[in-house]
Image: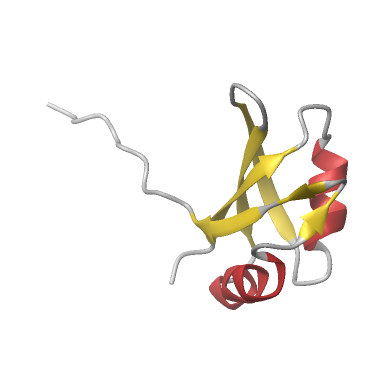
Length: 84
């Protein structure tokens, strides 16, 4: 299992600190990348160990946070550019 998760359907005015507070119940956040969507924000989060990512998905998926039902799913792998 990967240490990276995506937290989807976050409020548009959410901060990185809000995301850190949300995930503090499951582990230590190493990195957050906020991605604005059309009507929400998606956060790509790296946790310190993969067990924390699994726990975040188990505990927080479909929960309510700041008035919205959020999704917590495994992060999709990003494409790395080919080196020639």
